[in-house]
Amino acid sequence: MIFKRRKSVNHLDCHQYVYEFILDDSRIEFLQGGNRDLYFACHSKNIMKEINVEINNSDFLLYNCIDKLYYEIINKCHTNDLLTECYYEELVNNNMISWESDDVASIEELNKGNKIYNYLNITKDNDNYILNFINNSNRNHFDISFNTDRSKYGVFVYPFIVLMRDLKEISDPYHQITIDEYSKIKKL
Image 1: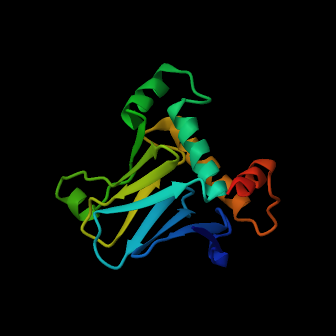
Image 2: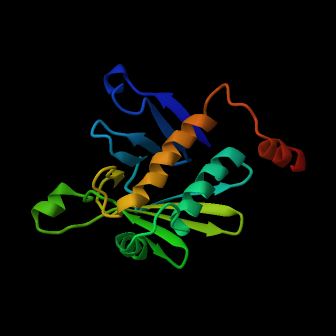
């Protein structure tokens, strides 16, 4: 479900890999840009207003990465100040994480005075996670950005940084299987 590919030599100052979700009619890349910000870059042949990715525990390692991200945000791990509480109220509603991109969706709309944003919604449905990428631009390529040093959600950007590190670990060709993963395989 997720693939890792090495970036070009010009991007060695940042994270060296791009992680791709390949779907039937679209592709989503999770990467770190040259400015050190993180991006989900969504590509499709046609303009799509929504792209959904369902992750279940049959893809055990990826599921665990998303589960960890979700748990860290929903439970406000490693946070305990009043300002963080304000960020949390904007980010989480009824156990759904709704990340409004830190960058506007369209420079053209911004020039007209409109601030329109793309979104990533993460919901848990029984044993599945649904990543819902919402496109509010009129393009077949759109981004959801996570500013690593100036995010509107403050410290809640860090679980996404950890997600990038975790994806590197699970897509490593020399990954050693864990006892949890082994148990899951045996149950299947």
